[in-house]
Amino acid sequence: MPELSGEFVARMEDLLDLYAADPDPRRPVVCIDERPLVLHDHVRPPVPPMPGMPARADYEYRRCGTGCLALAFDPHRGWRQVWVGERRTARDFAGWLKDLIEAHYPEAEVIRLVTDNLNTHGPGALYEAFPATEARRLAQKIEWHYTPNHGSWLNMVEIELSLLAGQCLDRRLPTLAAVRTEVMAWQEQRNAARATVTWQFSTAAARTKLHRLYPHPDPD
Image 1 (cartoon, one colour):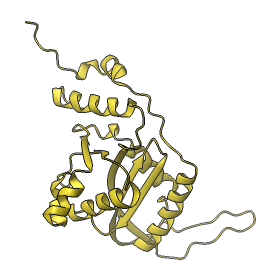
Image 2 (image 1 turned 90 degrees about the vertical axis):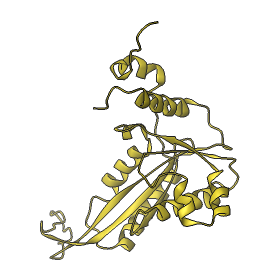
Image 3 (image 1 turned 90 degrees about the horizontal axis):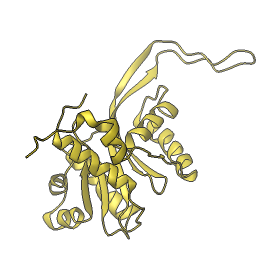
């Protein structure tokens, strides 16, 4: 449970008001997060389905290394972008932001970015990856909105990551190339459908339902 904290409430209300604001293509809202990957393969080949018999796979598996995926989600467009790689360092994060800015939102004045408090999630990552002039140019394209500690549920991308895990990554995938193939097919299908999240939790609702999280300052 989150602790009683003005900081928690301030960040929560900032995000809830951001989600409730009217869409603005010049200032898109994009939620981003990443997840580690563990690659697995079958020890014994699975048995394909036959008439009257489902596919079968042995419970035993072998680990084939690790990786990472990151997902950016624009709830107003019903659009998402997934990156699959080996690591999730500050330089990797900076690369995802550069791709987001230049390839996917070149006309945006600023991207209102929702992310958590991981130490690589900040403008400093851009300076670790790029020369100062380039880092500053990219940093000016981002408006940061952070989730509170213990408040990852306030990042809409968590819903997309859960769907990705259940619809696409719920099988044994032995290589990053295999993960990338599966993920790209999932992404293309979701984007074609413009699938999105209908977010209904508001600041007014939070002040009623989560009132215990709000500090109670002493009256004057």
